[in-house]
Length: 105
Image 1 (tube, rainbow, N blue to C red):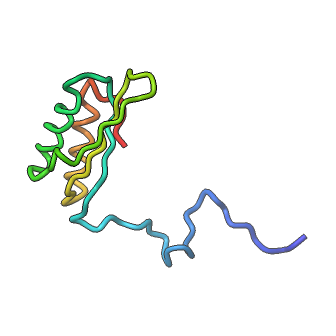
Image 2: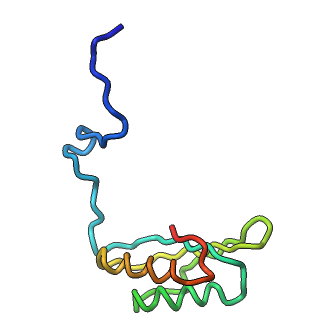
């Protein structure tokens, strides 16, 4: 048996990134978001309206809509231009507050 010390896996590694800080997002950047909700004809439009309030230059033509296997749910995958953490937090809060949205990733 070796007498090497074991690293606690619950603690972030300081050797991987050179420091204890997790990597930060550099703004502005293209930021992907996936929104899952009940399948309905207007669900994609509702998601686009919310995203456009937070990114007025959002291109709705670039979205991907993927229905669930049984057709009960739909995921809307978008990419917006993120300008800061406050913008993303506000977007996620508004999407989560929408009764039709089940999950935001």
